[in-house]
Every structure is written in structure tokens, then in C-alpha cells.
Amino acid sequence: MSDKIFEDLKNAVIDLNPDAAIVAAKAAMAANINPVDGIDKGLSEGMSVIVERFDEGELFMPQILIAAQAFQNACEILQSGISKEDIAKMSNGKVLFFSVAGDIHDIGKNIVKTMLMANNFEVKDLGRDVGSDTVIDVAIEWGADVVAGSALMTTTMPAQRDVINGLIERGVRDKFKVMFGGAPVTEAWCKEIGADAYGDNAADAVRIAKELVK
Image (cartoon, rainbow, N blue to C red; front, side, top):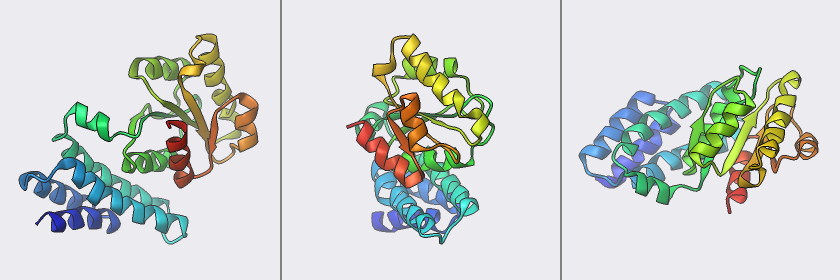
């Protein structure tokens, strides 16, 4: 029974079916399946397949977003049955995510966020056009491990430097690992402004996040 439910959760993501994901998650809860196993052995495995297909050029952003919705729909239901303590135990770390001040783009950010969630990171998404003061306030209050900001325009890239400078000015730069990405962003830029890492794509961001929190 449990194997079928894991397979249903996995296939709901692979088949880009958010409604099926809800049905599978509710079935898992009704069958008293360990919610952690449902995420690990079902949803996350499905997202791994999606990431592989995306990296190989078989899927594109519209499909990724639908898969992400399926994952999130089921994950919300399953996580309702997990204690905060258990969520903390299964977590690889806490990532604070946002699009920098002046930037209203979030498709790429949302893809990376979903990939991180599929790899057992706790993710707090502040959304779009987020000022550096807000980022720093929440990072301190929430106890983030990684602060990750996306810039999709060259005109908003300086806002990434503002985050670094703000952390320095408030004396908390050493408390967080900072990772930046976005279409115009480069590794050289991230080194120039003092960030800890640069993420080129979703898979790269997950790999780097794991390294940063070790």
C-alpha cells in the first residue's frame, strides 16, 4: 500500500498534475504514511526526475512551474502532519529567498525555491522587490543559514551589493552565507561584491546551498 502511495506522489509531480498530488497526499495521510517518507520517497523523487529533464532540455519553465505547484500542494498537506521538531531534523538548512529591491521577476526564483524544498531545505520566500533592510531583519529574526537573492536586470544588480553592505554595517555579515544569482549576474560580480557563492541554475543552487551549510 505504502509503495503505491509513494509512486502516486512521485507520478503526480512527474505528470505535472497538481490535483493528483492533492489526492495522493490526502491518501498518504489517511493511510498513516509517515509524512517525512511521503516527501522523501515520493515528492522529492518526482522533483529529481523533473530537474533532470529540465537540465537535459526536455522540459521548460511552464512545465517546471506546474511541477512545482504539484509538489507544493502535496507538501503542504504532508507537512501538516509533521511536528516542528521533525521538520527541523529533516532540514538541510534554512534559506531566505527574495528578488532584490526594484526587481519584480520571480519565475527563476520560484524554480530554485522549489528545488531547494525538494532537497529538504526550509525556505522562506520574501517575494519580489524586497529591500535590503527587510532581508536583514528577517534573516536575523528567522535564523537563516543562507541568504539568497535574485536579480534579473542589470539595473537591479547593485541591490545585491546593498544586502552585503547592510549585513556588514549591522555587524552580522559572518552569521550568514550569501548566495546570489539571476540572468545578468556572474560569478565575477558575486566575488566583487563579497558574496559567498554564485548560483548559475537551479541544480547548481541546490548543490552550492548544501556546501554552504556544511
